[in-house]
Image (cartoon, rainbow, N blue to C red; front, top):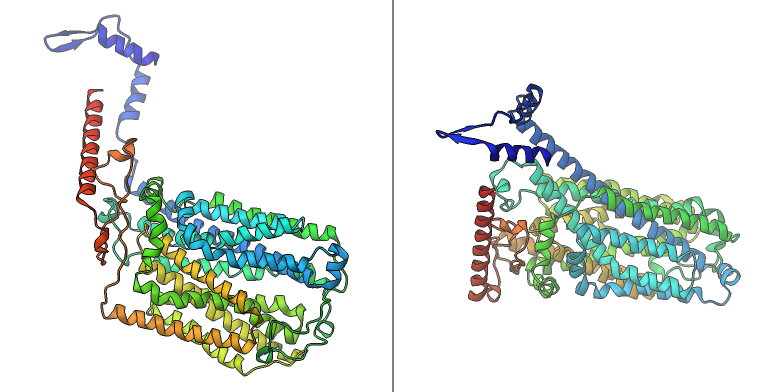
Length: 597
């Protein structure tokens, strides 16, 4: 400030003679070294290459995007690995009659487990009402972070197993399942679109903040969704670590647990594993060892939270987050229901339901009624590991969408499941016959291939169909809500005969394929689909951000059929004109002030 003051003083003391400004004799003069520094600072940089700097900047942006996708996938895999592993370990412990009597007496652990499973499976039914509101309120990344925090809360409540700790935490997990998955699907799709923008930063439409051309980011959506599911399916492997390294040392061999079992597979007439021995633990694990295991799981849950918080970038710019919220909370609440008018979603709804059926059938119906029933409980982690590794490796097959039509992987996965289900109809494994192991592992691997193709294909197709950033969270909410609804249906049918379960699975798989192919046929013949218009954001004019001439985040027509009843009224258009006029006036005033200064 002293330098500025001296300069201003010099200017004030100067004299203008004949139009030439003259300094007084006692005016301070910059030394030669200082003058050279000023010239060096203000002069042109000879060795500065603007294009090379720009390339390096966008290369860093692309690397950060890939890093975000990888660590978001890893965080989701660790979260679900911890959740499924702890749930499996606790259900095995609570199933053992001796463990319940010795550790907890007449507390009613089985009743607590039933209420806990009910909380996890029933509460997601209401998720369609609040999921978009939560995602828009917190933001996509923060919704992922908060959801992983809820899973960590569930782990922490297992330190003190009581009704008032386990059941409420399980219910909260049921509340957060759909928001977690909807935000994950939205996040991966947005990262693919951002990666396209960073690769093609020189294109005019991106420099002018216009919309990305239709289909331009499909390549990266395919790649990023394949990467996500390849990493996430490892959660089925991670979930078996508590049984591998801890609980497996306490289990009875299959001769004891399957001693009274007389029927397996398709011949089971009711429930899961009828006449399975009520004592499965040779010795009871000590409480301190259980605390050690739960502490390791708690640490892994906290690690997944940190991965998402620290190493994952934001899916949207701050101005985009503001615009997404500014369409009004009533509109945010209604838009998932309005999207159901799109025939593409209606025809894919059976597939969404089937994707929930098949993953839970793999983890419970097949592994328990076929695998454990014939090989014993000690083989359960190996069957699920085979399924998880197969699904992880096979998720890379989603990359075939880069060369083949999008129908191929999705239909191939469902057809593979249909053939397996037909075979399971006629197969009733013999209890305690270990020679059936290779065939059971083969079925688990094949089912994992079909699951990977289904999950990866569905997420890719949703990202292709709904490229607008304003509607992706709504569509992923519908997808994962229907998946959660299917899991609830599987929870209800647990006491049905195995033949009935296989029949429902087979019918849903066939209906899913036929419905999807019919939808593709309508698209091929150019039948127009109906997508609701996203209302334009309405802001209070404050801050520098709204001095721009145009709002680059404002929704416009995408060449799709829009509901006639949702067009803007004349009054709203007048408000928008006034809003733009005020912005121009603000900008002119701002430029005038800058020139005067």
